[in-house]
Length: 104
Image (tube, rainbow, N blue to C red; front, top):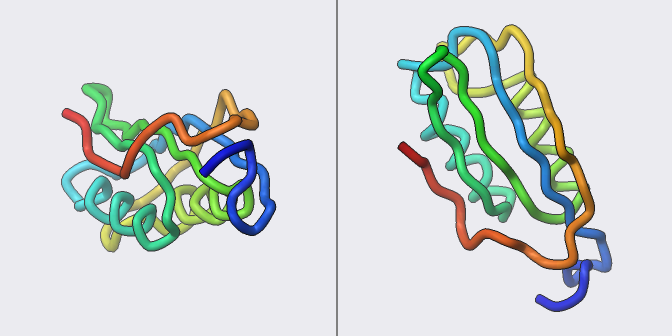
């Protein structure tokens, strides 16, 4: 992939996220990885020591938006999302990460 567009001519973007609520111990990271892979996005997800989940997602802007909705409203079965914070959203010239994975 070259330039800052995917094959559909959509700009690529990157966004950092932090999810608050009951999001640990409910397979939130596994479901996040599954959803990102379903959408064809790249990035990572990780639990924090303060009980939140953080990460980054990159890909076509419209699919990143779809992932943001999923992270803020759906998540894994059994989770209770109190709020989702998205920051550092920016257009990127190319994907900076390969694949989507869980960090520890």
